[in-house]
Length: 173
Length: 173
Image (cartoon, rainbow over all chains, first blue to last red):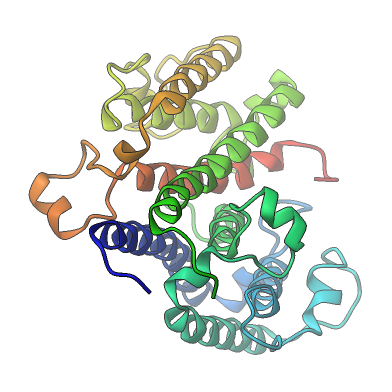
């Protein structure tokens, strides 16, 4: 809209902050990616600790959570809504039929690729707008509950489960 | 969409970014805090998974990492530099003498209380300045490597280990 010194500073601040947030998001997704491509199917099927969630369940869980970003961030329809029942609403070993590891890895890649396509096209100001899980009234009171904040929270969620998934790898990790 | 005063937007923008970042930091520290105050000493002394880091080691590790923020963010001297050798430079079960659980909990609280004192006094613009682990030349090229970015990264580090510490709790978690 208007160009001024203030606007430039404003743009720089926003650009930098978006970069900080998206860099962390990319870093943790890349770490999950690297790990799941290093683990054998047998390792991924094992429990991360005795009686705890399996690798395959946590992978499905991360896919479902990332897939839910499409409607929350206004990116359109979800790719795999059928995963919610298995990986969000039910615990591990629920007896529900689950996709194969090959399918889950494919879903993980597709969700991330398509999310990235939307993320890189997002206009800067839109990151600071309301996400679709918060009402207009609440957002007016709490302007930090914006779309970029969702990415901050989901990055922490990914790193929380990455800390568990790493236990599937050999001991040197 | 709506036209608003650029300067106000700028101020609001910075305030909002800082709040987003610090809220996540506080949330994860509070979750660690709640967990370590719920666990018995026996639980905290156990391994988070067979052959993996113990709760007490991870707690010491988180304290050492948070304590290192004082010099990195320009908040002054560290409180417990002696923890580095045990919890950053050596693995768990190194044979080094470690503080008691009571002492570690006290250190954890002191580090967090003193960090918060500095954090709430930090002028807004200073969050976007260079932190002390990056050179001026590198910062000129990579302005996202600022003090607030350290908080984003450390929050992800805390949540990574919280995902492991939670395995010390009973199974419903």
